[in-house]
Image: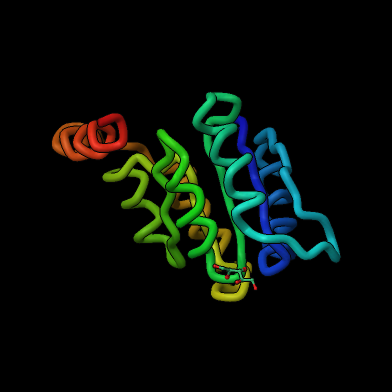
Length: 146
Ligand code: RB5
């Protein structure tokens, strides 16, 4: 599995914990920045990460800012992206099972590392259920393509 990841200055520390966590699990990670001590605007990171997922260059994307909210707003502007901000494992699993989210947004100033990594794992290792959920995603895609 390949994952694109990025953060702003509010998410840098959590992003680095996530990268280590993913690499320990044998997952290939491409880091789109920002780097340590840099200050950046979340859309400048969210767009290239989301575009890499939409283009099929990565299987999934992870975005971390202070709350995860700005990243999710920006990522959802990219066609084909279904991004969700979650802060606990139950919602994380359900957003994969029901919404087939391809980008997960986390808040570096919201969750502690342990909960954030449990939330990430719940998303990573859940499966999309399809069926009735696909009809709803088709409606979103039709709106996006209208
Ligand atoms: C940056 O200070 C902060 O606004 C950003 O990380 C994020 O929380 C926005 O949604």
